[in-house]
Length: 112
Image (tube, one colour):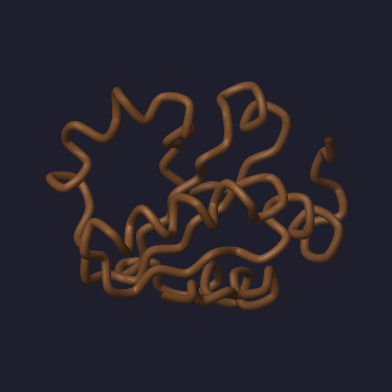
């Protein structure tokens, strides 16, 4: 199954509205998040999969729109595929990741 991609412009538009029906997941490492982050994202580093995957289904709704972020969009694409395999029905990868967001939407954000 092909994962839906959204642009950082689409992300910014979604973040400017009501986020009640959005699940936001950032799969970057904690040191990356310390450099640059977008408010509202749950931090679930892929390297800590063994820790957060145990109760993942209890914390996230598989039918709510779920947006996944990483640095450039590769790790988030992996997470999106995992989510689909877990039965999530509305998963979207943020194309270009936080790097693109920093350049296009928030130019004052730190880049790495």
